[in-house]
Image 1 (tube, helix red, strand yellow):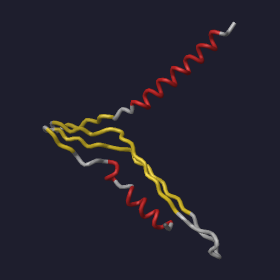
Image 2 (spheres, one colour):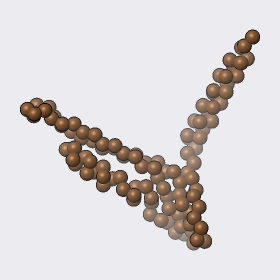
Image 3 (tube, one colour):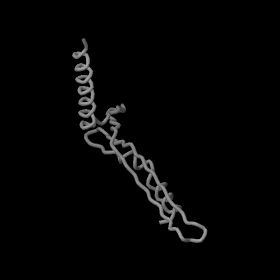
Image 4 (cartoon, helix red, strand yellow):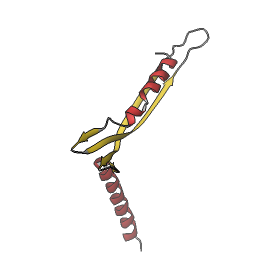
Length: 108
């Protein structure tokens, strides 16, 4: 894959359709999912004699961040809750509190 091809694929992949989902309507309520999308591309080249190879690559990632909920003409933002991240943060804070508490307990 050439570098220009990788950047062309990256440009086509990082569009608004990747961020906002198709609206879903049910019982008078419309929901539009939203994701945080990131991507990156890189490439190589060759020396003037053509002895070195070239290549390119591309990666894309997405995670849900929430949804717009439309009901009765009003729009409300409903954030997505990442339970695993929440548990990790609470655990890290609890561990830090235990370490600080142990240090204070050993002070003369």
